[in-house]
Image 1: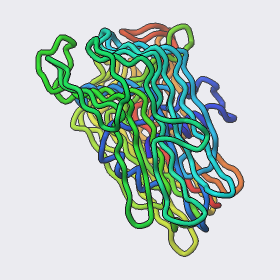
Image 2: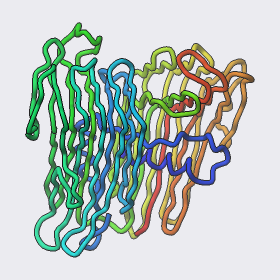
Image 3: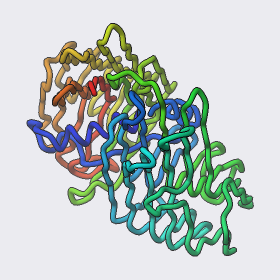
Image 4: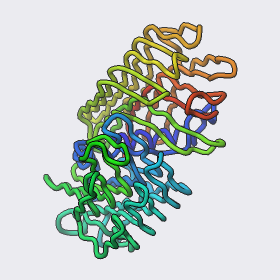
Length: 438
């Protein structure tokens, strides 16, 4: 899943890479697509033989009509692994739409004599959304999935460590909202509606999952005061957990993301634009596909068709996984870089094989013609403008583990350019593949 893929980017950044500025220290999470949530529900940390629990959490995501996505912010996920982890931000500022105080997202594995499970939860302080239309001192979203010693698996919006979905001093359109019940819907005049404590459960085949969104704004009115397009969504505080049974003893990662821009001020990560489309397989394998007809990051990037694919197979006690990202008709920062077509591929198998490739068609950066099949981590510099790394690769290995991250083209600005500050990264797609033997 995309949350797991970008989680691995953070791990790659924190590992032994040649350029310490290769990847910003962030683990964004894409949870804006309901179909993705349903797919994530089939994902699953270990219990009951080969069973898996998973959790992801994020502070906020703003999907502007499916064209531009801001965030997720302070996101964290554990994929198919029983790993406790936390992501924090001192605050979020997203255009004139959202400002917050401290944000913390946490994955907590809870295992004792009576149960085995994983909790994902997000805390946000001092929320001011849509010019004060929605405000709260604190909010928390919690999703906990577990298997008791006996009986069916369970998902709920509170965990046994004392965390529960909650709101403190919540106000909507100036009115105090108390005792919020799951899936409470309030109309927002001239804009649309907000759903509080939105809960999306899944169960079937002995599996369980739950996605909890503390605040979900849906824009349904054109010409609203905020200039948001019909179909735009704003998610504030989101948590997901799942527990599935009968998974194979090899976890698979295969997937890809479209272009992503990471924004920096004074060397501090302040925001993210994209990806507009992304996909990833469940840790049990299968296939997944996503696409966007066009990509537009205003004053930063335009592109035509963007496609992402992931596939994975477990057969004869071996695991195989692949991810592919492709992009057409790209123009970055007013022709700083243009190309006709771009494709990045990542392949992995449980025997330790890792392969990454990049193919560039009609690529020009400044006056430099880009190679068609660049060697791994090929870098050129446009003085005082940017460094451009092609077929950027990071390999992550460990006991039973074999993974590769491929960024077809990574543009790192050496000076401000358009709306971007020095140090900003623009990734023209990301592909990831990996296996983990338990």
